[in-house]
Amino acid sequence: FFLLTGIILLILLLLRFTPFVFRCFAAALLVWCYVLLTGAAVPALRAGFMIGLFLCFRGLLLSVSPLRIMGIAAAVIIIADPDALYSIGFHYSFLITAVLLLLAEKLNDLRLLQSRHLEIMPFNAFTLRERRKFYFGFSLQALLVSGFAAALAGSVVSLYHTMALTPGA
Image (tube, rainbow, N blue to C red; front, side, top):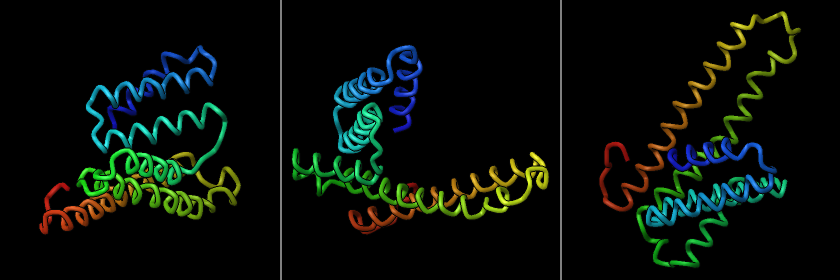
């Protein structure tokens, strides 16, 4: 997923002087080329569908929830290969992604709630250092919580498929 994201960022950077719609659709097409070249495993298909659909919707200036995009990706994968529903890669990929997407929404709400005092107070009430400290601290907390949630979701899949907790799952 991170390699795919890096490739997309590089493509968008190289195509930055082209029209926005062309840039988004070209990047989506290149994502699919990459997914097909890597063998089109279920996690790669999920990432390819999600990133490709996001780019297409973004190119059309439409706003769609990431959870809806993930649902579309799951439906297409299941329709194309019904046996994929029973694979461990499908369960890991979709469960962990769903947990992280749901958690991201809640963490954003929490960040907005906790940073409310920074917006209410006059700008000079908090130094730039205090503001950075708050945002860095919150980002670190969100990273730790997200990592724990992903590990917990992975543990559930691992327990279901192997009846054992796999370290690093």
